[in-house]
Length: 257
Ligand code: ADP
Ligand code: MG
Image (tube, rainbow, N blue to C red; front, side, top):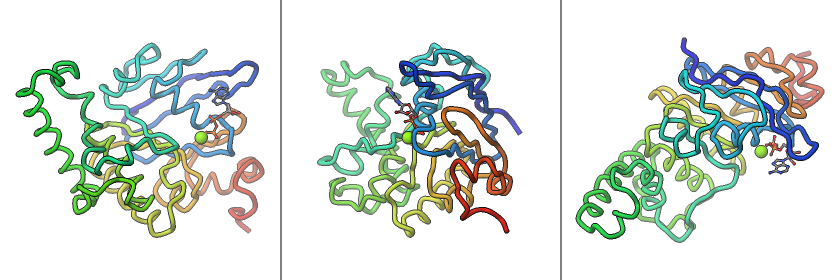
């Protein structure tokens, strides 16, 4: 077992509101880790801090033994920690493969400027991006719709496209903000299968999720937030039996009788 990500005393406030309040946690490489909690409890803010979108007021973020507090989003992404957004950020009128290819641009050898005027290098670059995108689409099971316009796909497939985009750079750790939100039960099952396949393939996963069927099925370790503070951490069984978690979030449906 190895520690991939360690968070110590992470704190972020907006005005007087403590969105994340002294959060410490450890993501290990041996299990899929979930972050759960009521709306407004600081989950998305946590991912924004981890991915460098927001800077913390206090605390340390250590990724692969390196303190990344002061790093920019692209530097963190280059180190292998990549996130998705709660709301889809796809280009609707572009095709599936084009949307996936965009994920690889930050890793391309030639800069964007040169890409624009150096036609030969750009063509080579595009070819390798396209080949990588085809591999990714094969992996996520969307190769057969690669030339479809994104807006013509069902929502569940659109979310997979976004996931595919993050895979272009071979992430070590993926931060997923509500990957199953808006999916129907069949789509949720497909997502669970894909996440397991990704994990087994070596990508570590840290996910915010409200669908307890997804969380309890694939996450061996769960951290629970309430009002920005960690109120519990443990296995699915421990979390389902935790009185404070039941009261704050799960409700009676998970209470063991
Ligand atoms: P969650 O993802 O758990 O639903 P968030 O992390 O989005 O919660 O939000 C935590 C709290 O911080 C909420 O009260 C929210 O309104 C507030 N918040 C989040 N982002 C901002 C922001 N950029 N400016 C001000 N308040 C924010
Ligand atoms: Mg959120």
